Image 1 (tube, rainbow, N blue to C red):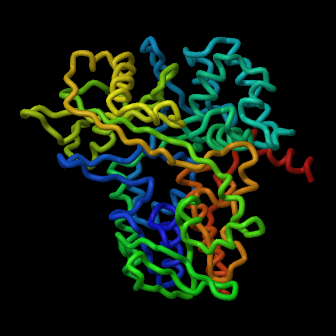
Image 2: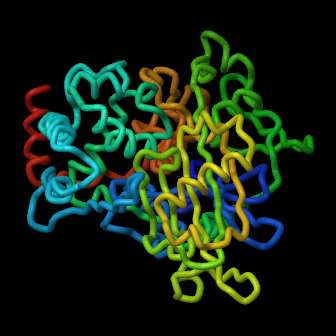
Image 3: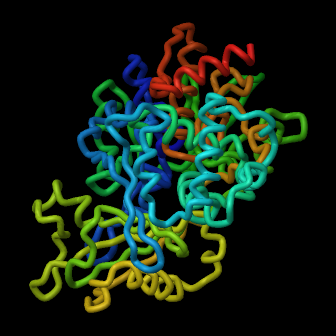
Length: 479
C-alpha cells in the first residue's frame, strides 16, 4: 500500500479486516494525507484544513468505525448562518414533515433570502427531488448553467447554492459539473432526513487514525512513515515491485497506489500515461485550493460551534475550542492560556480560494479578521494572541464538467496493481467520502484478484418519504 491518506488507510483497514497482511508506506511523518493535523513550534496542534462529514457519508462513517474513531465525531442537527449585518439564521429538519419537505419550515423562515429567492430555490429543489436526483439534460453542463436554466435569482445563487456547493465541492459553480452539485442536494438535503447532519471531529485530525494503524499491525501488518516510493516496476503486464527512495526494493503479492494523481505520474512506468495508456487522461484533471486561517483570541468571542458566512470571502468559522471541549476540560474553551487567561481558538475556511493563493499570509489574516469582526462583535474588544495561515494549493481535484471521462477505475488492467484516491472513478467528487469509497473499491478489486471476492463499499442512506416514491417512479420511467 503506497500512501497513508484516507484512501490508503481505508483500503488498508478493509484488507486487514479481510485477513490480509498489509504493509503501508507513507512518505510524510504522519498519517492522514491532506486530512491531517500537525504541531506548531509553540505546541499548538492545528488541522491543515477543517474537514467535516455529513450524515450521507456512509463509507466515511464505516471507516471511522473500523479505525475506532466513531466516538470522536460529533454530529450537529442545526446549521448556523450569519450575513454581513451580523443577522443569524438557522436551518434544521422538522420531525413532522417527510423528505424532501423536512427542512421546509426552516427554509420558510430563513431571513437571508427574499420571497423570489425562495420561490426559485423551491422549484429547483422540487425538480431534483421529483426526478429522483437525476434531472434531464445535465450531462456536460456546469452547475451555474443549470441554475440559470432553472431561473434562479442572483440572491438565490449567491446566498444559497454557492454557499453550500463551493464549500462541499471546493469549486466555483461555473467550474462544477451540474451532476455533482445536484447530487449534493439530493443525498444531503432531499433524499433522507439525516443526510444533512454535519459531523465534526472533536480531536485534531491526526488523532483519528491511530486506531487504523493499530488494526493493521494487530493483524501482522506494518505501517512505515517517512518511507517514500521512487518507482513502481511492472513486468509483463503485472506488478513486480516498488523501489523506495533509499533504493531498496519491496515485492508483494499486490500493490495499491493511493497517492494524488499528479504524484502517481512520477512513479509509474511512462507507457501507462502515454496516449494509449490507461492513465492518459489524468494529466487533464485540474486541482483547486483551500485556505485555512487559524486565530487565537484572549477571550471567548464566539458561542456557536460553527458559522456559515453569507456575502463574505470567508465561508465557515469553526469554534475549535468548543468542538474540542469534550476531549479537553469540558469548558468549551481551549486549554491554551496567555498570562493565565484561557484563549479561544477559531478556524476560518475558504474553499476554491484561487484569489488568495498569490496573496501574502498577513494579507489573508487581515482580510479574514476583518470579516470575523463583522460577524462576531465580541471579537472587537478582544486581543488577537496569534494567527497562522495554511494554504493547500492543490487541495482537491476540480469537479469540472466532464471530468469523469479522465478519472480511471481502481483496476486499470495491470495484474495485481490497483489505484485508490478521491480522483479515481468513485461516483463522488473530491470529498473524504469519495476517498474512502475509492479505498474500499480498490480493496474489492484486490481481493477479487486473489479469487476471494468481498464487498466493502457501503450503501447510501435509504431514501425516505416522498423522495423514495419519486425516485422509484423516476427509475421505472427511465427503464
